[in-house]
Image 1 (spheres, rainbow, N blue to C red):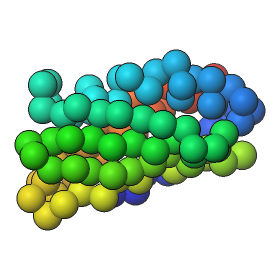
Image 2 (image 1 turned 30 degrees about the vertical axis):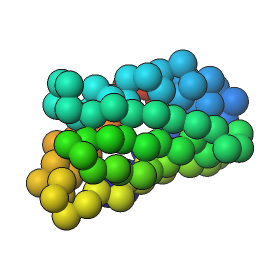
Image 3 (image 1 turned 90 degrees about the horizontal axis):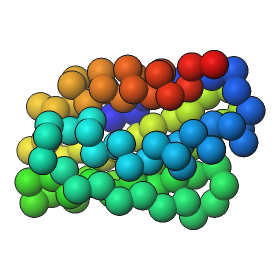
Image 4 (image 1 turned 120 degrees about the horizontal axis):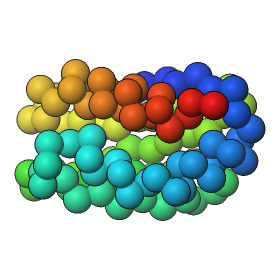
Length: 99
């Protein structure tokens, strides 16, 4: 799954908002279904690891000058969640990046 969200913010502001709201990523999944951890290996990349029904889903967020790219490698077993996850990411990510 890959979602690109445009923004008109500075990269510093995007990073600040992403760090402040990283704990909300788990809410993109149905309640109680996912345990999500995040890390920042560098200032423009946040890694995401979700544990969902015994499956590990790796992903990440890349902060770019005018967009944020969110990727998650959904296993075949969880591919049925792709549509709802993309919709949640677009909605909540768009809200987070709104001026």
